[in-house]
Image 1 (cartoon, rainbow, N blue to C red):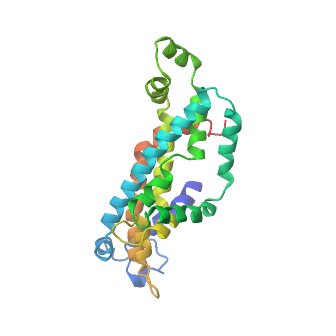
Image 2: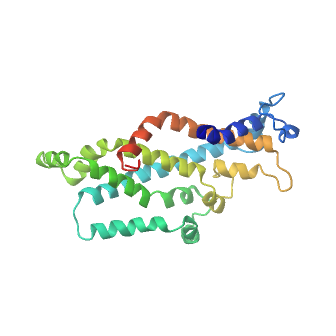
Image 3: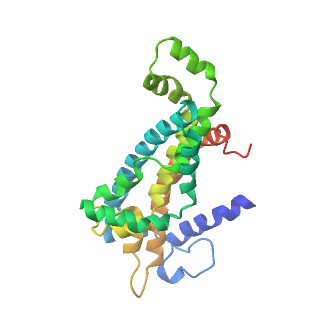
Length: 258
C-alpha cells in the first residue's frame, strides 16, 4: 500500500503526459487517445537534449569529486591518528545543521568574484570537494573494516596513500556506490542553485527546462508532464542498475538503523 502511494504521482505524471490540454483535469487514469507527440514537442520547444547532457556532465563531475574527497577524508578520520581528530570531525559534522539556503548568498558572491556566473564552473566547483554527509558515510564504513587489512599492508611496505587506494578503497565499494547514487540524484534534481547561476540555455540543466515550459499566464500541462517523465527516466535507470549495491551499502555503512 505504501509503495502504491509512492508510485501514484509518477503514474499520474505518465498518464497526464499522454493527454491533451482539455483532458488534463479528467480524473480517468488513461487518456482516450494517447498523444505520444507530446514527447517530441518538448524537444521542439526547448533544447532538452542539451540540458540533459549538461546535467549529466555536472552530475558526473560532482559525483566523482564527492567520492574522491569524501573517501579521502573518511579514511583519515577513521584510520589515521592525529591531534584533534574527534573534535575536528564533530565540528565538520555540525555543518550538517546549517541550512543550505544560508550558504547560497556567500557562494553566489564567490562565483561572481571569480567571474563564473553563467558558466559550467559555477555548477561543478561548489560541490566538487566533498561534503559532511559523504565524509561521515565513508568514515563509518572505513571504521568497520578489520585492522588486519591495514597491518598486513603496512608489513608489505605500503605507504599511507597505497593503503588507502589499493587496500581499503576497493573494500569500500558498497559505500562508494551509496555516495555516488545519492550525489548523482541530488545534483540531477537541484533547482535553486542552477536557477541562480545559469541564464543561458547553453548551460542550463534539465530542471531549468521545466521552468522554460511554464508560461507566464498559461501552462501546457501535458507537455510539462512529458518533460518531467523524460527527466525522471535516467534516475530510474540509474537506480535499477545500482539497487543491489545501494541497499548493501546502506546496510553495511551503519545507516540502516542497526
